[in-house]
Amino acid sequence: MRYNLLWAMRLAVFTGLILLESTNMAHADVAKASPVEIEKYPDQTQEKLVASYDSLMKKNEENGFSGVVLVEDRGKLIYNKAFGYADKKKEIKNTPEALFDIGSITKQFTAAAILKLMENGKLSMNDPLSKFFDGVPADKKNITLHQLLTHTSGISKYTGDDYEYLSSEDFLKQVFKRKLKAKPGKKHIYANAGYSLLAMIVERVSGQFYETFLYENILHPAGLENTGYMRLDYSQYVVAQGRNYRNNKQWGSNVERWTEAGGVSWHLKGNGGILSTTLDMYKWHRAIQTAKVLKPETIKLYQAPHVLMPDSTQHYAYGWGISNSANSGKVVRHDGSNGIFFAIVRRYVDTNTAIIYMTNEASPGANKLIKELVYILRFPDYEPEIIQNPTRFDRLKCKVSC
Image (cartoon, rainbow, N blue to C red; front, side):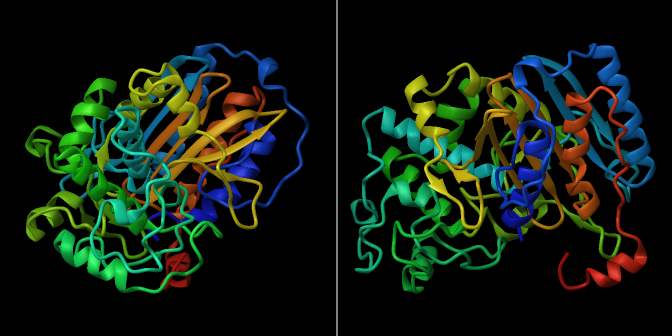
């Protein structure tokens, strides 16, 4: 649920093809559209684009949207504005600096940490689990880092609740005792636990805590000072409080759950739950585009279409979804959600364009916002649709899942 890969891919391909092509974490229903060459998509003034985004988002805010939206057009940051409430109960407004749970977008940081260790000669993508852990069962001992990074390890998707705190030893026991869902290397099966294993490997190889290594080698060099788990002084931030659209009740934030549990659970660490801002994620996009943290050849590996995703034209890279076409260029993306928060990063690498947004009230309507943001950028005469948050009747229909 944290990630809703299937939904993302469907929306990705649909949005991507008509615009720049498919999506990262989703499978796809391909929609036909008039060809649009990315080098020649209409040039609009920044003023016009900002006015269009303001008009759309103010109406969406009136309709219940809560979050922050950022848009880069051909290498220029043109939009980064907040809407709705970070804490509706206390009537605290969202700000562009507010912290949001970015869910499975966390995976791209874990992948980058592994690649940094590779650059430093500490490991190889072909290294097996048995190199890093003792007592790995026979069916799992030859699972490689590449397979963990591409979700082709075959390990179980689920090990436990995100906020059920447990030691690394207990987490490993749970992962190792579960039967594989497929033979390693044979099938793409999205597995959060695989990225938690990668985070453990970062610790064992570097001799540092995962978050410490991440900050010193990835986040800080890229200028991401407002991204992390427990290292941030949350008293200095506006921390978005999640709200459950199904019952309109306050859910809270990861911070209070980590405080109650005594730390970040290995069910979550490395695969989801990091808090960040739209501007920090934009800085990360720019750091990748300019090879600021990883070498150009490493970034090529980072964003390579390694594995075709099931029932899809999309590929999975290392913590990213990848699509490519003559009409849209290379599209690199991922979303993240725990059912309360939702975030998406979509990068059009050939045109230096990016769309990033985060919300603390995930809903089917809020999740569809990406299409409207993209169409405004690509089609000057496009009339955007206002996203529809679920009505009370819709909430009843979504009682189990939506």
